[in-house]
Length: 114
Image (cartoon, rainbow, N blue to C red; front, top):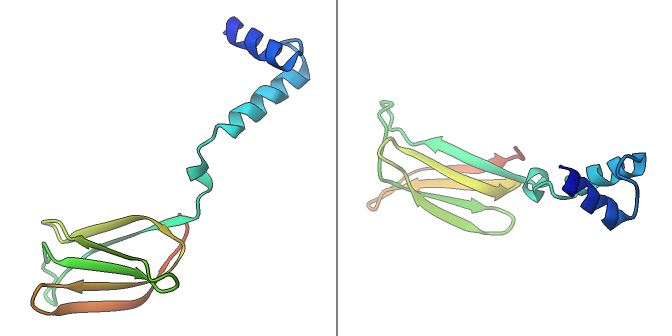
């Protein structure tokens, strides 16, 4: 720890025990926080079920941002679940379909910051 405090002290040309030194170390630490913590993204999570409540595995889920028309398509897993992470905040259309015919459509689906 001494070598690190001496390095920072030499870099900033201040004594290691001064108040400015501790403020500088704190500011440097805050600068290294991941930018992801300030990101404006959200996640859409769902489970596809039929009218009886049984899960529907391996169907296609298409999520479209209504403002940008950006589309993401993914299959559900064996439990009928899907996850679309890191979506920009906005309104989304969610469409679930099999190869034969559409199952359902939700419009608009709001995605808020987490």
